[in-house]
Amino acid sequence: MSTHDVTNQVPALSGHSLLATDPALEEGLRRWSSPAAYEDIAALGELAGRPEAQRAGELANVHTPVLRTHSPTGERLDEVEFHPSWHQLMDTAVAHGLTAAAWAEPQGTGAHVRRAAGFIVWSQVEAGHLCPVSMTYAAVPALRHNPTLAAAWVPKLASREYDPGLRPLAGKRGAVAGMGMTEKQGGSDVRANTTVASAAEGGPVGGGDTYRLTGHKWFMSAPMSDAFLVLAQTAAGPTCLLVPRVLDDGSRNPLALQRLKDKLGNRSNASSEVEFDGTWGVRVGDEGRGVRTIIDMVASTRLDCVLGSAATMRQALARAVHHTRHRSAFGALLVDQPLMRNVLVDLALESEAATTLALRLAHAVDEGDSDFSRLAVAVSKYWVCKRTAPMVAEALECLGGNGYVEENGLARLYREAPLNSIWEGSGNVNALDVLRAVAREPGSVEAFAREVKRGAGHSAALDHAIAGVADVGRYAAEPGAAAGARRVVERLAVTLQASLLAQHAPAEVADAFIASRIEGGHGHTFGTLEPPLVAAVSARVLDRAFPV
Image (cartoon, rainbow, N blue to C red; front, top):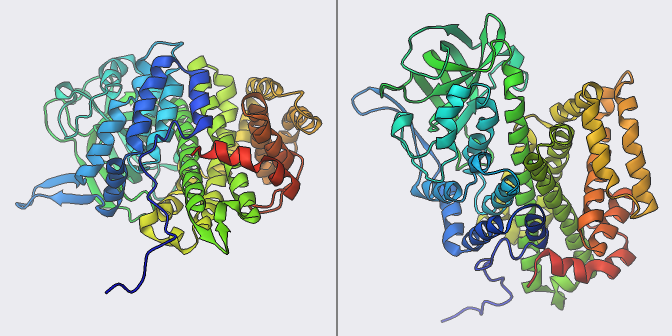
């Protein structure tokens, strides 16, 4: 006997290409990359939309990593066991060149934009495994400070073969890198680190000057990586070292995993606490210049924070639009109800602005435009990551109670949303970094200003905002500027996004973004666009947001 018929429920969101249904991403990939790169990511987009891929993402978060500190007979193991779905996800990411392959590809091919688009696509399947993917990508600029190490490690980090398991580098087809920077007492203040590195000649690890480390790290993600970039104190100050898990002679490097963090989100990814006791490392860069050595690495991981947050926004938007197109309430489809259309259009504007900005940052890496990247990455990392949590919350609300249920995908996105705003420097750290860049590196301000000026002439309001970029240097020099850093960064970020949309997005998207974000036609929450604007643009914006 049946108690009721099941009606008005939303079909599963699967069987679609995550590239072909995202016009902003697709257009940016075509604009700043190559036809071959497009074909690569198109294949990944099809794979990402399959139910099998989505199931792997679910399983990797249900069956979380397990720490094995000792063998049954009492020997130290210090290994983390992952569910097979984790390895499946990693294998796909590596095979599609999302780790360090872009650094090994010829200039002029848009390799970093290719990778960025792939990162956005594949992160929507499952975000946690993109942590070691990101760290592997970011390790290359730091390793280049030691040409001998780079020659040995970069080809394995850039490999498209995933080869898990702890073995000497020489016997591996591919490698993955991690990082260990923060400590209990310091957090983002890495100059307060207490881990010590003492010079020790003749160690069982090659590639340069060797040291032995004593100390700890409070957060060291992906502890099954083949090597880690670590900051430790030498007599000259903070110094960057490469710490392999397995030494050249096949023995394990002394590295004791104490426990795994019980995190709010990102649960598929193991984040460990670790202790060093005579652990071998090889110096990367000059003694006492460790912070300088990792600057380029931090720029790369911050770029990936922007990419990951843009991906989270995009997936939240797609799920909200899909749900409202299939769910009826009060006599009409949700997507046809005026206030819901206001919310969805607003979310779509935010998502497209984040995606376009993220790909522009990757394009700057392809161009070698370090002046623009220095300021724009810090600005974008602050803003896009900060906007993700409230946007995902609003998208979740579009599903009502169904959005709060694990099986519908939004709950995992909601737990993931705050992470990138914390990783690689919280909001305050990034905002203050922007002020430092403005004060100390005028070339970065000039490059930023040149970029936003490319959108000039679209509207008087945008022209006024662009003109205001020139004032940022004067403000940064004022006493007490630090207290207002967030407002400065917000203005810079929104102006850059508006300029990019004016250059590259359809008129209805650019006009609506500028009217709401630059001209002030917006309230304090999503869904507060001016009603005449919504009526004028909603059909085209929503069709673009997630094509049927």
